[in-house]
Length: 438
View 1 (tube, rainbow, N blue to C red):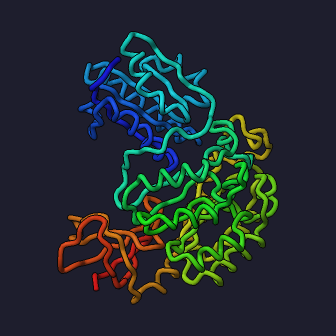
View 2: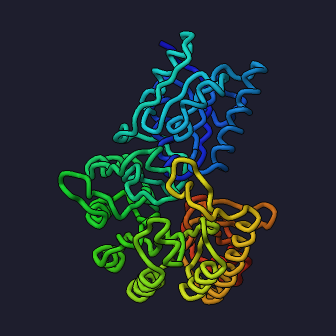
View 3: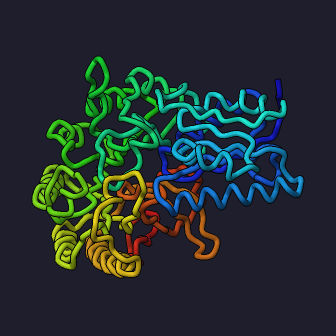
């Protein structure tokens, strides 16, 4: 049995992957020391993403960089976990000989066993099938907020997406396990619920729980101060969920609804359930019934057969919807998905042009949205100090970590990371806001 090694972990990809990493860190820390600098590590563990070609390239790049450190004798072992080996173990096991062990998306509890085996001279393939979550203990890598992954996998089968083939079918984590996990996180100002689709939560459980029911149970925990929702599919945003926004004081008035497009024809080809009209109706309903709600979404451009008319429909939708924020992605042709076989693939240069156009339209929408915030005061959770601008920065309720802008503010007295202060907004600059503490 090997103990006392220094392990450095690189976590790539989404916030769901971050939760997996935090659970793995908890298992690792039982027998090994976690270090913050890869250069100080004996073992480098890379938790990979493989959702898109670009994410696979990033993962491979990190692995090759670790391989150079290993060749120089700076580190001893490399372990690769997560989506890349889960989907492509047949390729990467032989093509990446510098890696000592591979684990899949549900194999983090085996990390210490894998370390024992590789130090015993074995090269390990411990990739199993996607299954239920392992344990509820985590080592948090965030400050003041924490993610809670309430389900894994996906059963929606959008035609462009590899997730079902990487992480398997949708699997809800039992409510009692989530309550225990959230309770063990300690004082959390913002609990961010994540899954491929939050709204399907509980439909596969024997007790047939639901997202609103889970939210109410989490809200009862004294250590949880606020709850934010990411990744709610539009067809699952029910009246019951809207009522939870209206009545639950712990609900942060923010929701991320991945829409992907607004052209009915493209949505049908994507195997999405809604239409541009139903999406717009939902957005208007949310704004009407939940005062001040910040709605974020994501869209794909360059999907096979997408025409200029389809893009124009999406542009018109963005202007009408006036989403608080939005992300845009170029369609990535992924082998193994239904869309891979479609005729009418769009050239890369054209995808880039359309992407820039959509960002330009949304930037104008954000500018208009931000005008309405100037002069108003919001609670802001401080995250740090910008030494170049000599101001503090943090997030208001309309800013989710990493994906939205920040609020920069001047304060005449010291502000600690995690402190909540009231900030009056004075001006906007791009996707960021500037103000002063009041």
